[in-house]
Length: 382
Image (cartoon, rainbow, N blue to C red; front, side, top):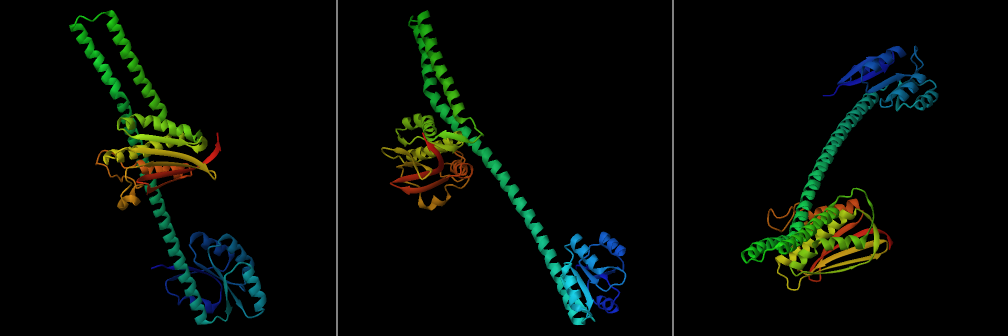
């Protein structure tokens, strides 16, 4: 149970008697300014009772000094009825919060002091709650920061997985071609067709293929290189690069892609923006393949109006089931087989567009498929 420290700067006998009746209170007394300063330096005081008629100190000057140096400690002054108005005016002018008139009314005094102490307890409890709340907020913020770091790391791993998958797809046919050339050398030897010219042609063909494969790596490296600096870039160029990186996979699966993009500049992160487009195209591709859609098609429309660029990616895969529409942007949510994907593509895409580029990424089912719309501020049309 809390014990309160009350500092009395008064020689009034009635006050001394009344103070002794207060419960859970430790009464400290000072009759000089030096004693008062010593007590304030050594003890945590909750209330100061200051007699304006104390003979050994200038109470008004002391009250003003106390209020300025220890504003958190309430000062209640005591005065007699002689020139009451003058004393009240002077006392409140120092910053004191209340007064008691001598002779002191017993009930009034006890009620007021107990009220002050109750308010002090409530304030102390509120401070403790605020401190606890602050600690909880900091803990939650730290947990969110750690979660964001984990999600960012996993998103990078997922992006690397997509990169490797795309390189593998681009390399599959060249590797098969090199394999056929090598096998043909053995057949040429068996059929007595192997000569220097044959070997030279085979070597040149293989080197040409390997050079293209090397160029593929360089191209993907440039496409996936993280650009930490925010800058202006061409919306049309970013979309075309994203489409080019995934178009061979779409072509192999007989998926048509139609692009209609205006040439405008936007501010943001061009590489990451391209990954968002690739992620949306990849999701549409997966939906079209899994549902076995006849005449599958993906459309990209980029337009400008009212200072905003709108990029719409739509497919004809039948749309997202109603029961999961509200969860598609949640982290780790996926409808694909376990282990195939992380479920972070749409989550990180929304995070990038909305929190990093000041735009919005939304979804709806329309025209027999899923429609994703990106809106971002533009600079100028070029």
